[in-house]
Image (cartoon, rainbow over all chains, first blue to last red; front, side, top):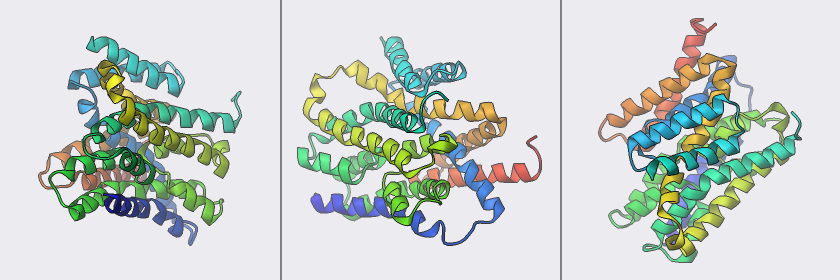
Amino acid sequence: MILLIVALFAVTIITRILPAFIVGKFSLPEWIVTYLNYIPYAALGVLIFPGILTAVEQPVYGVLGGIFAIILAVLRVPLFFIVLGSIIFVYIIML
Amino acid sequence: MTQTAFKRSIMDGMTIGMGYLPVAVAFGITAKPLLSFFETVLMSFMVYGGASQFLALQMLTSSGALAIVIAVFILNSRHFVMAFKVNYDLKHESFLKRLLLSSYVTDESFAVTANNDEDQHTFTNYFATFFIAYAFWVAFSAVGYLAGEWMSEGVILASGIALYALFIALLIPAVRVHYKYGIVAALGMVMHYVLGTIPFVPSGIAIVAAILLAALLGVILERLEVFN
């Protein structure tokens, strides 16, 4: 088991630290920089959906929780309280 | 900005930690019948990836070690793309500092720091955010293992929304800056959904491909001057 964990450590750390060796070696063309700037938003979309459908017991609760988070974010509620508020909201609608 | 960059970075770490809390507790609870306490904490300490760790537990009873290692490698390959962006944003920092920070890159630590302010782009600030989040992950895996049965099931279930609320909370301010970020995110959602429905595509590949394709479409749309 310990050996397996060490092996998992090896394969997860490689993907994370590899870019540290590459970045800075040469300057990137402009379109790659533009591309990199879109990566976080593409990633956020990918991470939100369809995962949110299985986040809590029923897809509809996940979607409602997501809508509640959107409302809080539009109202400029700080990040921390959006996370906390959404948990409380989902807890209440699941009662 | 009334708070210093360092204070904001600490708050960012706490926010990610809040999102991790329920997932880490759930990991501790799930691991209990399968692993010893030491192995559970060691896994969170060394692997540090929610999806990867759950996948490993899930496969433990049915698959061989090599299959688990390959599956986790594929699932984790998305962190290459994310760590690349982190390293690019911090390219003014030394190699060793970037190397250390890279080892703490997760979906959440990447997403939060990719949206932080310019004045937070220093080693110290990133380390504060990343390390606090990491400490939450390891500590609450242990808490879940030891005290899982005393926690309210309803609260743990409801907490499943936490990371999604975090991702949404990060996306909305970007969309406020420009709607093109919302379009790219929506493309990412569609891509992930479509690639996810194709049989025999490992989920890790679907995630990486969806991110790369959606971002590429963003570049293409920008080149075609669709965004104004």
